[in-house]
Image 1: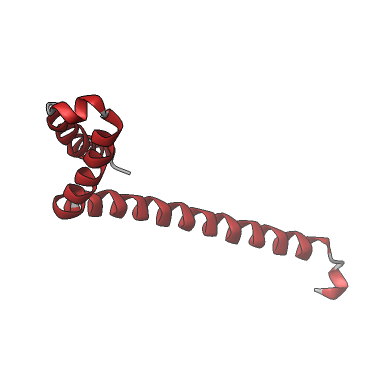
Image 2: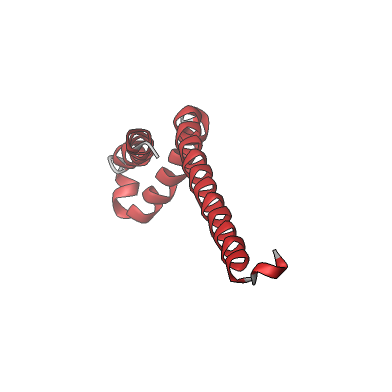
Length: 99
């Protein structure tokens, strides 16, 4: 996974939450009820990320999919090598008359 794309997406998501939270906390009603400001900021941040952060999200998920596919390929190759070793070992253990 490319660390840069994951870092960019994480920072943008945090900004999508923290900027509305800071703005909402400037209002007097939200100073008295900061939990309500956090709830509204979370909803605003979620909406902003769904609308504007589609491309960074696609990059991060694409990188994760590539990494997962690469690990599956190496696992399948290891399984094939292990199976070949077992077949070779059973051939070596048989007497010469059966070959």
